[in-house]
Image (cartoon, rainbow, N blue to C red; front, side):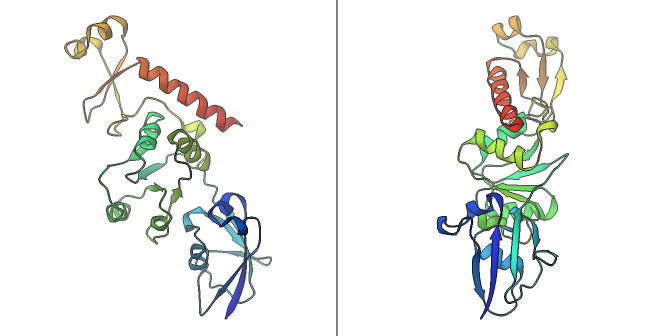
Length: 236
């Protein structure tokens, strides 16, 4: 029997049982085991892991753990300029919020785990899910385990994790289908507008994919409040 000692930094401890948080964890194992396998055996997906090191050197997830190793694991800290997300079917509201903020977020409410994996094989995206086991699949190269059940907090989590505050471009993407919106002349839309909309609004955008029309009505004002709250949190 071999033994290794792990120390997890930052919010990685949130994946651990309460009695293990903030403490070195002793892991007993047999044979040749990779760092990925032993870390995930503790319930931490490899996508959540950043720098890994012993007192002597840096390691990667493919490292074969040696008897008596003392290993420190830091959380991932990614900065992305143009992220492209793939969300599981439990994160519909988060999808809408990300799209409103201008981020490419692919979502269908009927996608099962195997569908998500097949999509990742052909389209390199960041998988967002609350399913740790799904994130542990080898095919998942980039992903984030969403902690909160509250959609607004989930948005903050994702933007904080990938340092995306400066890349927020609100109301440029269709919240229904993810396509980029196009400006439209009011005169062209008049037959589709309700009387009060015709009277009080002059600026419109149209989705070229699903043909949905958008203007700065009450929903726009509500979303402005959401954006303000999230950006204020990110500034703290």
